[in-house]
Amino acid sequence: MRIYQLAVVRPSDLDAPESSRQPSLILASQTDLSSFSFFQRGPAGEFINFLTTMVAERAVVGKAMAVAKENHVAHLLRSSHNLCIVAVTDIEYPAMVARSLVGKINSEFGQQYSSWAVDDATTKDQLEFEPLKDYIDKYQDPNQADTIMKVQKELDDTKVVMHQTIESLLQRGENLSSLVDKSSELSAQSKTFYKTAKKTNVCCIVM
Image (cartoon, rainbow, N blue to C red; front, side, top):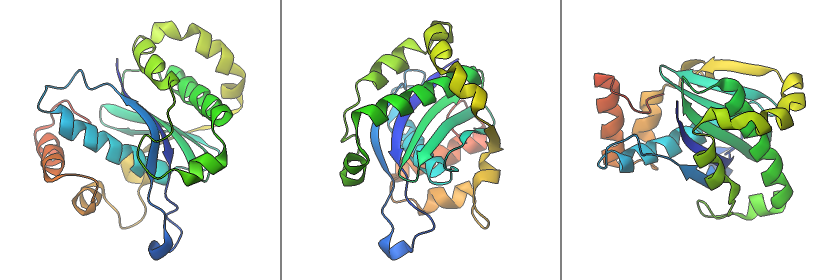
Protein backbone atom coordinates (compact mmCIF):
# COMPACT_ATOMS: atom_id res chain seq x y z
CA MET A 1 0.00 0.00 0.00
CA ARG A 2 1.40 3.37 -0.95
CA ILE A 3 0.62 7.06 -1.30
CA TYR A 4 2.51 8.51 -4.27
CA GLN A 5 1.44 12.14 -4.00
CA LEU A 6 -0.60 14.59 -1.95
CA ALA A 7 -1.34 17.83 -3.79
CA VAL A 8 -3.35 21.03 -3.53
CA VAL A 9 -4.33 22.19 -7.01
CA ARG A 10 -5.85 25.31 -8.52
CA PRO A 11 -7.60 23.71 -11.52
CA SER A 12 -8.03 25.40 -14.85
CA ASP A 13 -11.60 26.16 -15.89
CA LEU A 14 -12.04 24.02 -18.99
CA ASP A 15 -15.32 25.80 -19.79
CA ALA A 16 -13.58 29.17 -20.14
CA PRO A 17 -12.38 30.32 -23.58
CA GLU A 18 -8.94 28.90 -24.25
CA SER A 19 -7.50 32.35 -24.94
CA SER A 20 -8.37 33.55 -21.43
CA ARG A 21 -8.05 30.27 -19.55
CA GLN A 22 -5.73 30.28 -16.53
CA PRO A 23 -3.56 27.15 -16.54
CA SER A 24 -3.82 24.65 -13.70
CA LEU A 25 -1.26 25.09 -10.93
CA ILE A 26 -0.10 22.78 -8.15
CA LEU A 27 -0.06 25.15 -5.19
CA ALA A 28 1.53 22.74 -2.71
CA SER A 29 2.57 19.10 -2.93
CA GLN A 30 4.57 16.24 -1.48
CA THR A 31 5.57 13.20 -3.51
CA ASP A 32 7.02 9.82 -2.49
CA LEU A 33 8.80 8.13 -5.40
CA SER A 34 10.88 5.73 -3.32
CA SER A 35 9.22 2.73 -5.00
CA PHE A 36 10.64 3.81 -8.38
CA SER A 37 14.19 3.26 -9.54
CA PHE A 38 16.49 6.29 -9.46
CA PHE A 39 16.26 6.80 -13.22
CA GLN A 40 12.46 6.52 -13.26
CA ARG A 41 11.83 9.12 -10.57
CA GLY A 42 12.16 12.21 -12.81
CA PRO A 43 9.69 11.16 -15.51
CA ALA A 44 7.42 9.43 -12.97
CA GLY A 45 7.22 12.65 -10.93
CA GLU A 46 6.38 14.71 -14.01
CA PHE A 47 3.71 12.26 -15.03
CA ILE A 48 2.12 12.22 -11.57
CA ASN A 49 1.93 16.03 -11.67
CA PHE A 50 0.33 15.88 -15.12
CA LEU A 51 -2.29 13.37 -13.99
CA THR A 52 -2.99 15.27 -10.79
CA THR A 53 -3.86 18.46 -12.64
CA MET A 54 -5.75 16.57 -15.36
CA VAL A 55 -8.14 14.87 -12.93
CA ALA A 56 -8.51 18.06 -10.86
CA GLU A 57 -9.62 20.00 -13.94
CA ARG A 58 -12.38 17.48 -14.59
CA ALA A 59 -13.56 17.00 -11.00
CA VAL A 60 -17.10 17.95 -10.01
CA VAL A 61 -17.27 20.84 -7.52
CA GLY A 62 -18.53 19.70 -4.13
CA LYS A 63 -18.09 15.98 -4.81
CA ALA A 64 -15.57 13.54 -3.38
CA MET A 65 -14.32 11.37 -6.22
CA ALA A 66 -12.16 8.30 -6.73
CA VAL A 67 -10.78 7.98 -10.26
CA ALA A 68 -9.19 4.63 -11.02
CA LYS A 69 -7.10 3.09 -13.75
CA GLU A 70 -5.80 -0.42 -13.36
CA ASN A 71 -3.68 -0.47 -10.18
CA HIS A 72 -3.84 3.21 -9.23
CA VAL A 73 -6.42 5.62 -7.85
CA ALA A 74 -6.67 9.41 -7.61
CA HIS A 75 -8.81 10.39 -4.62
CA LEU A 76 -9.94 13.98 -4.92
CA LEU A 77 -12.20 16.66 -3.54
CA ARG A 78 -12.85 19.85 -5.51
CA SER A 79 -14.30 22.07 -2.81
CA SER A 80 -14.62 25.13 -5.04
CA HIS A 81 -14.00 26.16 -8.64
CA ASN A 82 -10.40 27.12 -7.81
CA LEU A 83 -9.31 24.49 -5.26
CA CYS A 84 -8.95 20.71 -5.49
CA ILE A 85 -7.14 18.28 -3.19
CA VAL A 86 -5.70 15.13 -4.80
CA ALA A 87 -4.16 12.01 -3.28
CA VAL A 88 -2.66 9.53 -5.73
CA THR A 89 -2.35 6.02 -4.26
CA ASP A 90 -2.07 2.43 -5.35
CA ILE A 91 -5.32 0.46 -5.58
CA GLU A 92 -4.62 -1.42 -2.34
CA TYR A 93 -4.61 1.74 -0.22
CA PRO A 94 -7.84 1.96 1.84
CA ALA A 95 -10.22 4.35 0.08
CA MET A 96 -11.79 5.55 3.33
CA VAL A 97 -8.42 6.57 4.73
CA ALA A 98 -7.45 8.39 1.50
CA ARG A 99 -10.80 10.16 1.37
CA SER A 100 -10.53 11.24 5.00
CA LEU A 101 -7.00 12.52 4.43
CA VAL A 102 -8.11 14.55 1.40
CA GLY A 103 -10.92 16.08 3.47
CA LYS A 104 -8.54 16.95 6.30
CA ILE A 105 -6.07 18.62 3.93
CA ASN A 106 -8.89 20.59 2.31
CA SER A 107 -10.05 21.90 5.69
CA GLU A 108 -6.59 22.79 6.98
CA PHE A 109 -5.40 24.41 3.76
CA GLY A 110 -8.56 26.54 3.68
CA GLN A 111 -7.83 27.73 7.20
CA GLN A 112 -4.26 28.72 6.31
CA TYR A 113 -4.80 30.34 2.90
CA SER A 114 -7.51 32.63 1.58
CA SER A 115 -9.07 32.38 -1.87
CA TRP A 116 -7.12 35.52 -2.79
CA ALA A 117 -3.81 33.77 -2.02
CA VAL A 118 -4.93 30.85 -4.19
CA ASP A 119 -5.89 33.14 -7.08
CA ASP A 120 -2.67 35.17 -6.85
CA ALA A 121 -0.26 32.20 -6.90
CA THR A 122 1.89 32.03 -10.04
CA THR A 123 4.48 29.26 -9.51
CA LYS A 124 4.35 25.57 -8.55
CA ASP A 125 4.48 24.85 -4.82
CA GLN A 126 4.34 28.59 -4.09
CA LEU A 127 2.04 28.18 -1.08
CA GLU A 128 4.05 26.36 1.56
CA PHE A 129 1.91 23.83 3.43
CA GLU A 130 4.00 21.89 5.91
CA PRO A 131 1.36 19.29 6.96
CA LEU A 132 1.67 17.55 3.57
CA LYS A 133 5.16 16.32 4.45
CA ASP A 134 3.96 14.89 7.76
CA TYR A 135 0.91 13.26 6.20
CA ILE A 136 2.66 11.55 3.30
CA ASP A 137 5.16 10.05 5.75
CA LYS A 138 2.71 9.12 8.49
CA TYR A 139 -0.09 7.72 6.35
CA GLN A 140 2.03 5.44 4.20
CA ASP A 141 0.87 3.10 6.96
CA PRO A 142 -2.93 3.46 6.94
CA ASN A 143 -3.05 1.88 10.40
CA GLN A 144 -1.87 5.27 11.66
CA ALA A 145 -5.13 6.78 10.48
CA ASP A 146 -7.29 6.21 13.57
CA THR A 147 -7.32 9.87 14.55
CA ILE A 148 -7.98 11.26 11.11
CA MET A 149 -10.74 8.70 10.56
CA LYS A 150 -12.53 9.81 13.72
CA VAL A 151 -12.17 13.50 12.90
CA GLN A 152 -13.53 13.08 9.38
CA LYS A 153 -16.21 10.42 10.02
CA GLU A 154 -19.09 12.86 10.30
CA LEU A 155 -18.10 14.61 7.07
CA ASP A 156 -17.60 11.33 5.23
CA ASP A 157 -21.02 10.09 6.24
CA THR A 158 -22.62 13.00 4.39
CA LYS A 159 -20.59 12.73 1.18
CA VAL A 160 -21.48 10.78 -1.91
CA VAL A 161 -18.28 9.49 -3.45
CA MET A 162 -18.24 9.27 -7.21
CA HIS A 163 -16.23 6.29 -8.46
CA GLN A 164 -15.03 6.70 -12.02
CA THR A 165 -12.37 5.52 -14.40
CA ILE A 166 -10.02 7.88 -16.20
CA GLU A 167 -11.85 7.08 -19.43
CA SER A 168 -15.25 8.10 -18.06
CA LEU A 169 -13.80 11.28 -16.55
CA LEU A 170 -12.39 12.52 -19.84
CA GLN A 171 -14.57 14.73 -21.96
CA ARG A 172 -16.03 13.52 -25.23
CA GLY A 173 -13.35 13.26 -27.88
CA GLU A 174 -10.51 13.15 -25.34
CA ASN A 175 -8.24 10.24 -24.57
CA LEU A 176 -5.29 10.02 -22.21
CA SER A 177 -2.68 9.23 -24.85
CA SER A 178 -3.57 12.29 -26.92
CA LEU A 179 -3.53 14.51 -23.83
CA VAL A 180 -0.06 13.20 -23.02
CA ASP A 181 1.16 13.90 -26.56
CA LYS A 182 -0.22 17.46 -26.48
CA SER A 183 1.00 18.33 -22.99
CA SER A 184 3.63 21.05 -22.74
CA GLU A 185 4.19 20.11 -19.08
CA LEU A 186 5.72 16.73 -19.93
CA SER A 187 9.25 16.31 -21.21
CA ALA A 188 10.00 13.94 -24.09
CA GLN A 189 11.48 11.57 -21.52
CA SER A 190 8.24 11.54 -19.50
CA LYS A 191 6.13 10.91 -22.61
CA THR A 192 8.38 7.99 -23.51
CA PHE A 193 8.12 6.74 -19.94
CA TYR A 194 4.31 6.74 -20.21
CA LYS A 195 4.25 4.97 -23.56
CA THR A 196 6.77 2.33 -22.50
CA ALA A 197 5.00 1.67 -19.19
CA LYS A 198 1.65 1.40 -20.92
CA LYS A 199 3.02 -1.01 -23.50
CA THR A 200 4.83 -3.26 -21.03
CA ASN A 201 2.29 -2.88 -18.20
CA VAL A 202 5.06 -2.36 -15.66
CA CYS A 203 4.38 -1.08 -12.16
CA CYS A 204 4.12 2.63 -12.59
CA ILE A 205 1.58 5.43 -12.59
CA VAL A 206 -0.25 4.80 -15.83
CA MET A 207 -3.81 5.93 -15.23
